[in-house]
Image 1: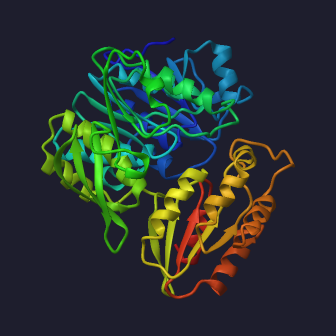
Image 2: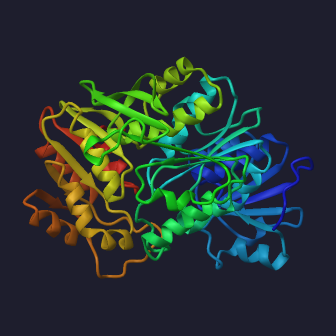
Length: 467
């Protein structure tokens, strides 16, 4: 594999430079003295920002974009072998790295490289930890999979030996990483267009855990089923965390870092007593809603404490965190209706979001859901129906295909039937215009309207608000 020499900057070309992650790493290399160029199919906020700071961005992908002075090409999993630039790079025999391999190379350039993994919650936990490190004056370099207002985007370039990054399990990308400290938030059945089953996913997370050497630290959710199998035989330090639940026979001594005595304010924002190895540490208040975010905060707190950041600074950072884009994001008010947008696209995430929403001020919860990928919808059809049934009214959009082609054997109509069988009020519309018209006529003063999904369903709420 090609090794980047950070002491000898060269020219690096990105195929798909406009992606939220790719654009961030392009900017990082640009600031480190590399000559960076890249191409994408169209312009967006990321491409415009890169052009503004001096990166050569080409709109449209063509063979002529690949020239002999390029020393390395970086590409995403979305780039297929029939891509004209990819083919030209192969023809010229220019070294290539995929996005995950690039992140792995960057990690080798830091003494403290923290990778946050898990099926759900990566962006939130990465953001919480980032704010804790910034409040603790550790000046980290940060790569987050969403827009974090505190850093003005998805990348922060620090001047320390601390690097914080999400670690995605899809296509085993995180196995190209070289972390010194890792978090495993949860292990759930997802991405079954790549993984065979849950056991296949668990094996990948075990391989990820084994990336740590004996001087590393692993922070793992002790509520993961059979979590001991994941960390078995690791030579590094292992810390567990979890939420105390007498029904599950867990106590404050069941985890290294434990949350107990949870309560919620009138906005659904949680607070809890923090314990470390059975000893009370402090009362923690969050500025985001739901029990899932209490769980997400625990490994961020744990790494902050292990990094010798004072508890008052950790608490201040968590209180300053109000969420990231598309994670229960307040979009505005319309005729007394609160409009929220959320990225949830897996039954576990939907359940967590709607349970949290139940503690938020509302009359009825109206959930507009856009299923994400045909394979996920088919695999979890009944689980999606159960999760969405937590809303008072459900409105379904067509399945967002993403990287897939329509197989013809699954549609939102199937999900509509499953939800109706549960006795819930559910509607399906094939266009966003029809959804918006329905919402205008049926949402009442005091309702909580949530647009939900990993596709472009956010457009519905923004259009209603005139954004």
